[in-house]
Length: 73
Image (cartoon, rainbow, N blue to C red; front, side, top):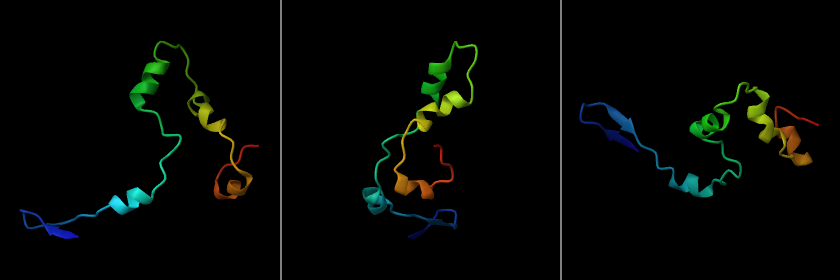
């Protein structure tokens, strides 16, 4: 829907309620940045791989592997 603004310009408004209702909730949501910061605070070393170790432990169904850009076997 296109809505005129007070300054004469136009604004596009989109209703995403039906899209949100059809979307599957993420079973593995990304952690909040402050939570990650608290978890690593006080440690002398924090490697890049540590941040993704949880992702690498999730097994992927064989039929879905072709849909990904990265396959770890």
